[in-house]
Length: 215
Figure 1: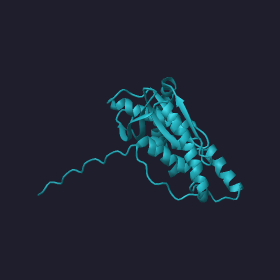
Figure 2: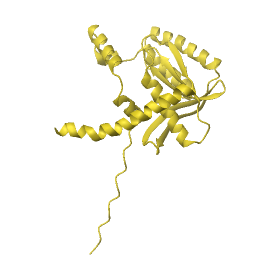
Figure 3: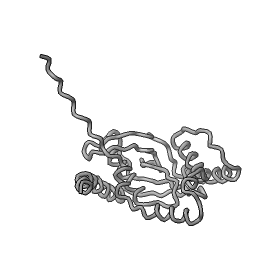
Figure 4: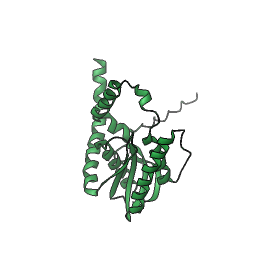
């Protein structure tokens, strides 16, 4: 009689950086935005359509990653504003001698069991920095936590010197104004500890949630 082959254990599906942060994210700002949009008589879906900020985001991404592509159809005023805002970003990038080192790197943390995709590692003022860009009307804690988590992934890979700085390129949703925000290594280390606490909370949440679903 033929023996039955044992099935291989199913690979564990690890949580992502954004999934961990999003699970415990303060949604107050998002709720307030939705309320303001609704009170203004605007449709939430329409509010997410093409804005100057989205245009500038594509220009910034293309510049940082060297992947320029045609912009979507927009009004003359939108394109003109986007180009002015992008010019201010290029001036900042030139001032700080921003050069791309690597981009869109997918990494897995075996030590802490999570995955993430690092948007960009650049050389800035001669030092390595992990960088991301966001179309947003403000910079929030989850943005910093995301960069800190990326740095943890880079630490574990230990291929090159790990970035000691981080920067979020904030792009205004409507006005397209570019506002870079930078953090030093001391701040990143604190943010890393907070992210790891959220990673632990993810496992507790996963274990306890079924109890209440079954009740």
